[in-house]
Length: 93
Image (cartoon, rainbow, N blue to C red; front, side):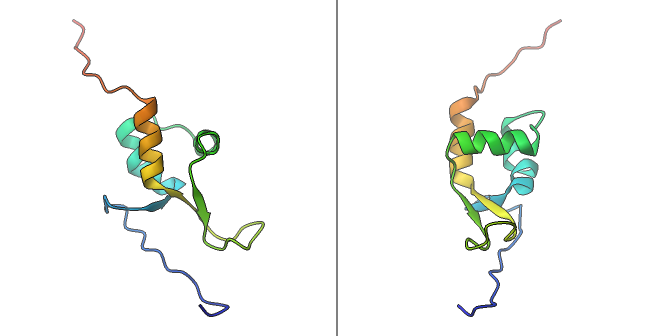
């Protein structure tokens, strides 16, 4: 790859087969399925770091900045499935 080449990542959030997503993309799509309300980005970042969910920078050589950080979508889904309980709640009269 050329020195100044940029990696173009499609930002299609409607793709259910996504492998990588940014934190805002995860908050808008995947996390809304499992959590209501969706926690703050700071909280999610701490959870993902503690769970050792893989994350990737657009420019891994950059120590600061370097573009958006991408998280592994399958790892996030696995983490959420292991931490949430799916139950059907009855309406209370």
